[in-house]
Length: 348
Ligand SMILES: [Cu+2]
Image (cartoon, rainbow, N blue to C red; front, side):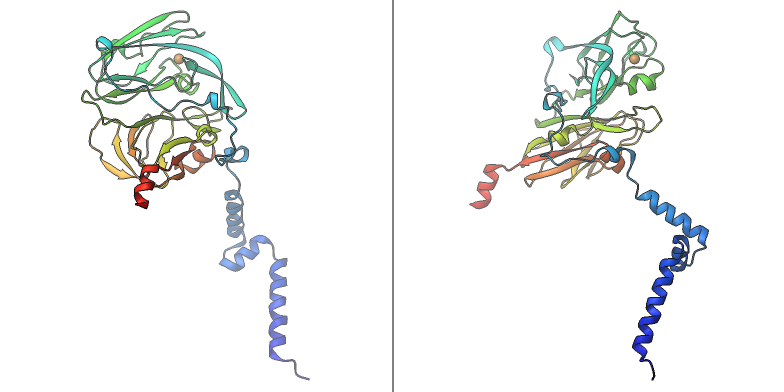
C-alpha cells in the first residue's frame, strides 16, 4: 500500500524538528543563520548578556506613584528661592561643610555624604545679575575644602588656591555675572572625591530685567558610585534616586513651568520629558530659546533651562534618556492636575 504524501510530509517535518532540538544551541543558530558554530555561540552569548538586567535594575525598578517608599519629609524641595532684588543689592549666604552626614541616596540605602548645609545637592543659591554675592564658607570637616563658583569673577575668588582648613571660615565676594545657571562645588584635591561625596550645588543668576514669572523647578542630575568601582549604582534628580517617583511633583494643566537643570556627574545626561516638548535656553545665558525639543544632552557640568506646559492632565515621566540612568533612579513623575477652568471652557 502506498503511503499518502501528506503523511510522509508530516513524518519528515517531525524528524527535522526533532533533529533541530538535539543540535547544540550554537549549531542551531548556525543552521538558522548559516554561521560557523563559534560565531553562533558568540551571538548566543551576546543575547544572553543583553537579557541580563543592569546593575541598578537588579535592585530597583521605578515604581508607580502609588508605591510610595521614600519618606516625604526627606524629599529635596525642587522649588528654588524666588527671584527678585536683594536688600541693598547684596546677596548673602552661609555654606557649612560637614563630612559623613547620613544621606539616604535610595530608599533604605544610606551613605556618609559630604554636604553643604547637610543636603545633597547643596542649597540652590540665587542672585540677580549685577548684585554683590557674599558667601561665607564654614569648614566643620576634618580636611581642607573650598568653594569654586562658575561665572565671571577675580582669580582670588575662584576657590582654587585658598584651602579653608578644618575649623576655619572664608568669605567669597563677587558680582553675579553673567545671568544663567552656574554650578558651585568644592575644588579641594582630589576634587573628584570631594564632588562625588556630595559637595555641589546650583546657583541661579537672574537677568536684571527678570524672566516672565512661572512655576519654577531646580533639578541637579548626579550619581553615586558606592563601592568606588568606577560604575555608579544610583543616579538621581536632586540627590536621591527615585524620590520624585515616590513623591510625584504636582503641576497644573496649562501651567507654565521653568525647569533649571544641571549635570554635575562625569557622564553625559539627557533630560527628557514625556508627552511634551520644551523650549531650550542653553546654560540659561539667553532670553531667547534656541530649540524646541524633548531631549537635550548635557555634558559634564553643562546646564540648561527648559520651559514647557502640559496641555493634558495625567501622569508623565521626566527622566534621563540614558536608560540605565533612568532604571537606577534618574526618573520621576509629574502629576498634571486638570485645570477646572480649562475643562469648563471645553464643555461650553
Ligand atoms: Cu572639599
